[in-house]
Every structure is written in structure tokens, then in C-alpha cells.
Image: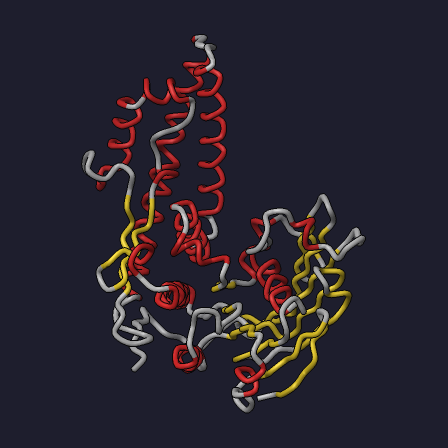
Length: 381
């Protein structure tokens, strides 16, 4: 029985009604009109299935889940790629577009160029992919990124807080390197005090945002999805055990003073939320160390569904959900359970290399075959 807890379920959802791509990865030029519910893209490896999911993710977040260098997404020998999506939200239609060149990225809403701060609220997407498995298997930075993405989805102003904090850490580390190399002028020391004050201000905001979002995730994780496995999450501050976390600003200030000499010696910042982690436990045990590959993929999916639940509770609509290579480390029973759960909620796009999986959903999904980046309609629900 599917019993994952929803904070609040509402039927409204974001829907992509038309998707276009030109000179993107191996897509020369193509478009398709997806179903408002389930869309399955299948085809052999290296045909471009994931490229279409990447296009959707880029249109929503302005970033790729596969590379930090957007120039890599341009079709070979091309100097420009264009992505477009027609999106329906609360019965309103809008046109989103991104123009990519080797050195630039331009964002458009209804034909008008917009800064990222105004563009990002128009389409919300969550993705479960093999690249995202680093959230489960990788280093703490991947789990911090997972939390930050979730926090930004429910509070777009958090992007500014996070960006400012990252600039503070970058500037502080630059100063610390100079000092560690022997430049201990009074001016550099004074600047370091200034950066620490800003670190306290923005670090405290990040701590509270991540802690609050983790608590909401935990609320949404009550119950089971694929069986008896239980997932629990806890935000683990690097300041844990050093004082009262409910008085975080004061504790952070105290730790910065105590670690002052150590930071000067090593040449980089040792204190702050950039060293925190998200603890993920599977049936009470560390998911990274004790869960099987299939259980780890299940855990990531369950976390993504919890993110969807949290987003829905706060925004009163469902985001678009992407699942890449759905049959990797996930058996057919779990795929069926997942799709049953999503059927009346999100617009979902999933990819598979197995034709038998795709065709088994004829009648309840729009099925598309992908060949050399081209979309070929095989079945409409």
C-alpha cells in the first residue's frame, strides 16, 4: 500500500503543454506536445532521451543536472541553442525560452528578456536521475545542494541568501590564503573581521532555512511507498555538540572566535553551514553505508516525492517531475508503485531504454520513441 504522507494535496499543477529544442545536444530541431499526466520517452542508449529531460530542467532552473558548463550542451559546431516551453499554471499560459551561446545565457518570459531572479518562479521541476544519486552516495556538498534546491523552490529569495553566503566564503578564503602565506597586515585582519560578521548574518539564515526545510521533509516522509522501508532525515550542523543550536548566531560567533587561529594557519574557512550535512537513514541505518543499490535508488525517489509534497503544501500546486532511466536499479514492481502514486498528481516525464516497459503503459501514458534526438509519437493515453 502506498502511504507516503502528504502535508496537503491539491489538484492544481504546472503543466508543460509544448516543448521545443533547437541545436541542443543531439537535437537539431524538434518539438512535441506532452500529456498533462505521464510521458514515457524510450529508445536505445545515446539517442537523446536524457537530453529532453535536461532541456526541461534547464528551462525550469537555468542549470543542467549533467554539467556545469552550458557550452557543452550546444550541438557540435553550433554557436547557439534555443529551448522553448509553453507552460500552463493556474489556467494561465506563458512562454519560456532560453538562448544559449558558448559564453552566455539569455532568459525570456513571453518574449521579454528577464533576469534569473524574475525568471525562476515560472516553472518548478524536480528530477530523480543517476547523477542525483550523489545525494545518497556522495559527499556532504551534494546533500547540501539537495536541501538548498528544495528551500529555493518554496522560497525564491533564498537564492539571494545562498549566493551572498557563497561570495562571503569565497572572499574570506581569499583573505585567509593571503594571511597564511605571510601577509598579516592590519588591513587584511580588519577585512577578515568584517567578512566574519557577514558570515554570521547570512550563515544564520542558511541554517534556519535548511533546518526548517528538513523538518518539512521529515513530516512528509511518514509512511511507506515501496514496502516496509522507512526513510528519516535530520539536518546535522557542524556546530552540533558545541553549544545551543537554537541560539545559532551566538554559537557561530563563538566558534569563529575559537577557530580564528586555526583558520589563519590553514588558509580557509573552517566554521559555517558550508560544512554541514543531511543525515539520511534507511530503516534506522545510514543509507550510504548499509542500503543496497536498489534501496538507495528507492530512497532518492522517496526523498523526491517528499520534496514534491512539501512544495505542494506551500504553493498549492504540483511541480513537474522528471525520472531519468527509471529501470536502473528499480524493479518493475517499484516502477508500478511509483507511477500509481504519481498518476493523479504531477506531470511526469520518465525515460527508459526498454521498449517493453514503455509499451506496457499504453493507454495510461503518452509514449514517445527517441531516435537521434527526434521525438516519434507511439501512443497517446
